[in-house]
Length: 82
Image (tube, rainbow, N blue to C red; front, side):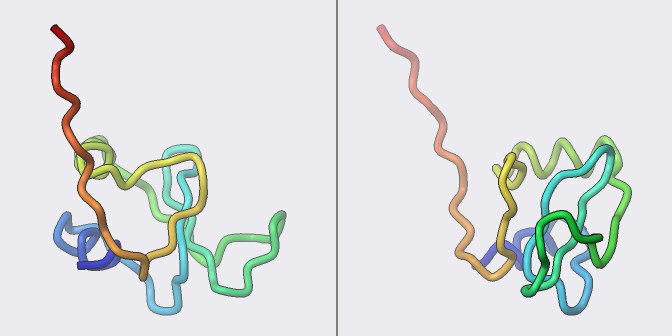
């Protein structure tokens, strides 16, 4: 499964032609493969609280751009230290 598949599983729309995404202020910013830093995003999608929380729980939110075709790796639960 890749990141795009996981986003679809969470009912997050992935626009055609989107190569990667990043978290904006209350939205996801979808970027093309040839995106130049400082340029406009190809699409900005508002994110609901439920979508944000589901993406956070799935480990799909980070400070860097996320490539949608990269393999999805589920976050690992950290065990309690005794």
